[in-house]
Length: 427
Image (cartoon, rainbow, N blue to C red; front, side):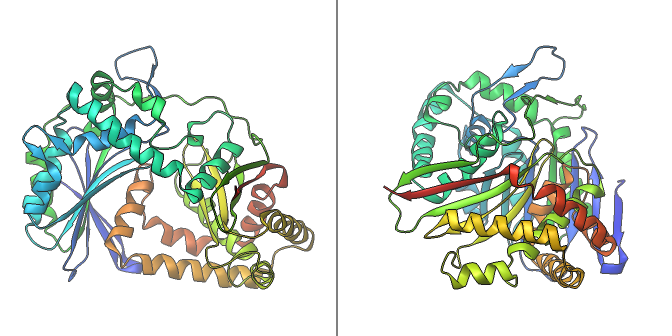
């Protein structure tokens, strides 16, 4: 059996990669001495993939919002019963999630890995969808949609995306709406499954103390498709670099207002290590600007304008990118004013190189600690692998990061004209 071994000797890390004849890649990341084992079967298919050209066809297909998440639910229901019950009988812990860009099925276990892994491979490849089960699922997912609709934090988050984006589907809830899922049919679900669940659009990862050759042999024996498929053409509406609106407010029953603000970034057309370089740069800059050791964070905290709920992150995908930060605040507008003044001050005075070096090292330290978590390794690996880079490539990028580059990124990303604020206030 042929497979590649990719080593990162400087950091004593490696992974094994096997490619099935269908184009499916299987990655095994060994973690010697770990009792738990963690496996995923993922497809590069998320909530933003609502318009596409099916391989072999010429006309675009448009599907209802929320269908990727709907399909995730349906795969757990098989002709001979619930997949969850079968995993439970094997003593493992299964789960799945749908994001903007991926759908991931997973389990973790300590014993009976091969049996659990076989179940994972089989149920993801064998959808069983009926008209009756689709109608039943609409009620279940409808309850889930209502639950998120009543969650102030969730609403503040998605309202910010609506403020930033005019047309891109990232502005819509991952589960869709009651109206959009009412349009979903068995035939549309199978059409999406056939398009996006082809092995060539999928990835298997296994993290833990396992025999990688046995894993690859199991994949070889269980994958039912051998022919490769052509690339799926994904269609996204035109989106300008400017934001949709600078402020969105919603009234809900909250004791303290919840806010999210962020910057829309049009620099998402990156490839290879440049993706990691840019992502690290923005995250270090967010720490420099308003991380817990920053002057701004201390001032905001001392004025009781933020509390421990304050968080920040950066997302970079192949058709959109944005930073986002927020939490609870008695006065979100004043937080925005202080953030704006700090950005203008730093652009005038320049960034502190010593502070940059310290926070870059801290960021690298957090990354290395992340490599102790099987779940974190797997989730990060999946997201990056579909972008053409691997998790361990971060290590080389950290070592090559330059202060001049950070300064340039700060000037371009933190553009006040592309800043938006979303607030959920008391009714």
